[in-house]
Length: 113
View 1 (cartoon, rainbow, N blue to C red):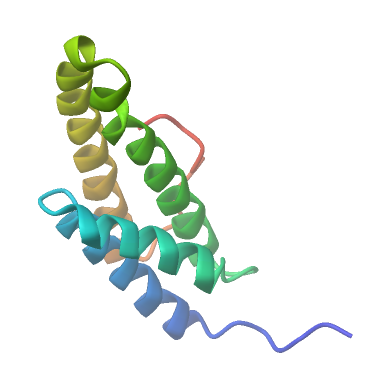
View 2 (view 1 turned 90 degrees about the vertical axis):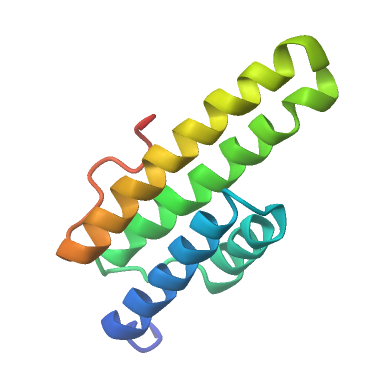
């Protein structure tokens, strides 16, 4: 027997917190990790448009994390790559905030940008 349907307003608030933490994580690393942990802990609100926001945030977290580790693996190319990854994450956060504000789905959350 399926569980109760997810509350769309609660899912909307969770997505907002996740996006705010990701945005703060562009300046500080700790909120970035907090957003990633919360995104995985809360899980997607299946059956609501906020599930697309969740998938988008989780993908941003993992690719951003890989990009943050680039300077450790290859310092010469890692620093420029870190700048590119930061800009990519910032662009994804702008897209996420705009979709959240409009209350729209994020079409194709697996898309690169």
